[in-house]
Length: 385
Image (tube, rainbow, N blue to C red; front, top):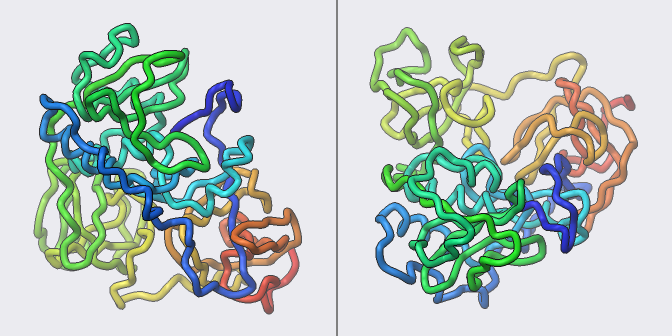
């Protein structure tokens, strides 16, 4: 994640705000900002020098496949690497529309590239985290410049704290997600100013397999994790994962409640081979975003006097207070069902051409702008808080 330098804005921690959109009813059109500009395809993006490992070359190909995609503050830092809608960084005016831009910030792009190249989420963190990554097989000082670098090496900028990362291509070129208001691009390397050096990522791993049978790829965690013939730990074991691995999830459903490693969940994921895995061991929220119900369960019923509503849109955040500057409580990557207790007029939110000051309070105590709740701007039959 890039933290802008003092030329524009003083470095800071990642903002926890998000600007969100509203209509009184669900808009029919998709976000126009998500498409790659036709003129942005850059034939110069690729492996431009010999010597890189197969893993590094695959990472370069993955990064170059995103040429023309928006820079978006916070983009690329979802549960699974890939483009996401960003959010306003709190200071840069150019970032105010990042919630409308599905893309990557600088470290989100490099995270995605090496995830595609290795099949493992090696670089989940900020540019500073990546600079200090234990996955570095070699390190190069700022004084060495770009001479020892090979395609796929990661270049960093920052004095004391790293605020930016880019990927070297060879021939004095690099690919980067630079700043809000721009698109992922190829540009000449910069080794002056606060250039801090580079690292070469460990070349082990294998490319991420494509999802099978229309499924969605997720990464597991834990060791000796078992899949079962039905969504119950008492059913026969189909497979055992010795460590984290990639799985293709077809659908999910509420079934047997499982408690393991400090977590409790009744959600199970159906994999491409027909086996079942408790969602406890699938990286992401308890109910996986964007994964359909298998048909064996229904959304939890409203509780505590609440009323169920359907959300719309992607990258929707709930907050601890009815204010986009309040702490983020939850993140809905895809439409989901929420239980609304009451609603209140609070901070006015404007984005995507819509404005609303109504906020819904959910059963967990968090707040969601009514912008992303299907229905009128002021929800019917929901009391005022």
